[in-house]
Amino acid sequence: MSPSPANRTSEFRDTPLPDREADVLRGSIAVLRDRLPATWTVEEGGAPDPASDAGFDAELRLSAPDGTAATVLIQAKRLLNTRDVPMALEALQRAAARRGDDEEVVVLLASRYLAPATRERIAAAGAGYIDVTGNVLVSVGCPALFLRDRGTDRDPWRGPGRPRDTLRGPPAARVVRALIDFAPPYTVPEISERSGASTGATYRVVGSLEGQGLLKRERYGPISDVEWRPLIERWSQDYGFAQSNTVGTFLEPRGLGALTERLASQPDLGYVVTGSLAAQRVAAYAPARLATLYVRDLADASDALGLRPTETGANVALATGTYDVVFDRAEMVDGIRMAALSQVAVDLLTGPGRNPSEATALLDWMAGHEPDWRR
Image: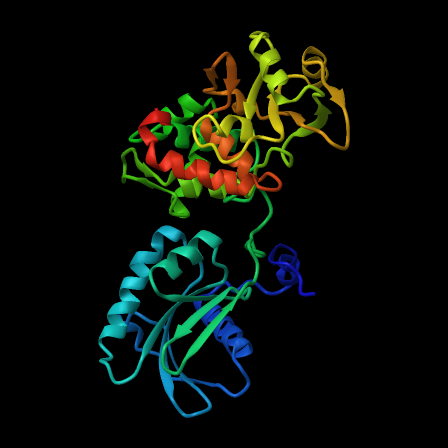
């Protein structure tokens, strides 16, 4: 079995950093040769004149066994953020358009490492990509070829210290939740105030998300747009109900109806309901089989609710931890404190069984009713 993209990261840590665009280009072409069938050939053309503003860094001739061929234009970037993809592709596509219609011309962006969001943006634009870790997408109509492979999902050459693009930890969670829950425009200091995160943490998260194309910030101005659904999906890579908290499983022998009755009778209990039970109030998918709650204290909450600890057959999961943001902007519904829908969505995305499908249904509802939940 081949290693997963996450596990493959360690393979490159002892490999010299592709610190120049020439290194990226050489490494990317090597990756392409390695992934092609043995009967295909790659010939490198002459490098364009640097003063000509050609829009590409290398031209390849990709030939099939029957002699048909296509031209591949590659632009290499040492680092490539999601937000920079349109500009990079524009230059490549202009170069391709100048070639005429005699032979298919394929455009590829290459970098030492391309983040998942960057790869998705390139593919959505109808172009291809290669990075030195082995993330590849090449599609040619004639000769027919579709080549796709996965390398790593994290930059193996990122230096020590806090990873710039991580959304782990309570400060990042506070910023992410505020960006999702509040509709722009707003400034970074305003998001810092609304989220309760420090100014430094807010600028770090906003800068990272801007680089990933998940929000737009006017130059010297406010944040003007937030791609809230992709942001929730991106956050789910670094946060999860079970992964980021201490979780206890319990049995309510009388069923979830009895649990909700007891919750409604205890307004002073420190809790919020998340997961299926919270989602079904707006996007019913199927009857909830497991109630998931955030609580201030596991022992106090389980005693107050009359729950029995169990490792099998549980119908209640209680979570506690350092992420106090889970309680922010909760809403009382029929006497029960429900977590904000942004929190419910990320918890379902990272949950077991049918939870991810429930998350999709909830996100679809949120997309169609944005004024009903976004402030």
